[in-house]
Length: 219
Image 1 (tube, one colour):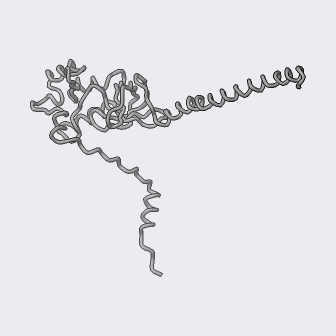
Image 2 (image 1 turned 90 degrees about the vertical axis):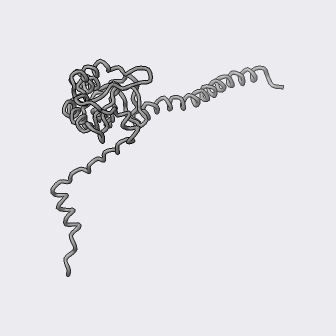
Image 3 (image 1 turned 90 degrees about the horizontal axis):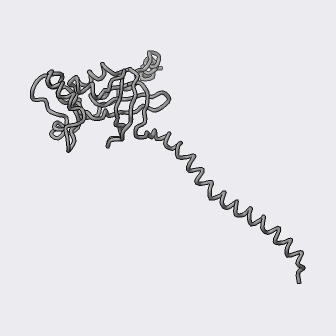
């Protein structure tokens, strides 16, 4: 028979061991949660995730067409932006090149702020862009370089600006018969995506390339 004193001593030793074991299990279970919490922001940063309503400052580095541009934020990858609330002529339809040039002349190379709304089916960021205190969407419609985006329920949020441009016969409204981009896409499909030009080589690299392509001298 065990003595009572020995049993009490065993119990006193067992309680701290059991408590430590329980803490160990809890800590092990908490580690994955903590790791996931720390990994989530890193994954979002790698993916360039944007939050609705987030404001991103940068410079307009490229204009693709009358309603699509590239914003270059400092220290971040470039963001391709589809201006919200407008529909500019397709680059391959009448007045498409003029709309692109108008947006380039007003915004290219200037500081800008994007207010992100969503991503479209092409993965572009959709949002409003402000340059020098002016909404690019409103400016493009008011100057007659784009239409207010139509929805199933109304004629879009920039109809006031469109009516003004129509009354003053600006841009696409200068002549009758302008085809809205939505109707153009139905009959012609989307325009081919423009290809980026390869970067220009320095004179030294061009000379090295010519020498490498020259036939070897006969011995």
